[in-house]
Image 1 (cartoon, helix red, strand yellow):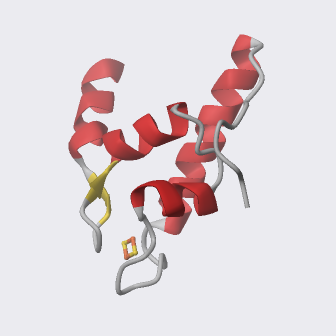
Image 2: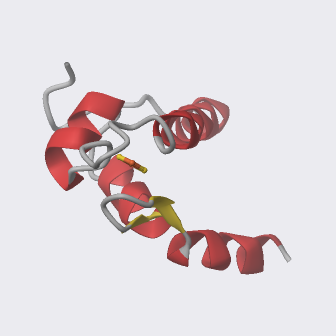
Image 3: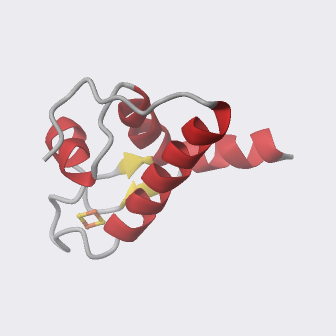
Length: 84
Ligand code: FES
């Protein structure tokens, strides 16, 4: 059930203005974009007409959940890209 929900979230648009899906955001996070600003630079989320009013809370929740899952598994979150 959980994987089915994850699959649906991968195809759901999180940043509606830029048509960026949850899967694209998760891929960028795993590749080292560990802040909203670095995601903005990497995949242009939050650069649409609403200026991130709709997507920023969802993306920050996704980032927080990812960092917490890393902490639970004992890994340290490292960024391969510069965080601002
Ligand atoms: S929904 Fe992301 S910039 Fe508008």
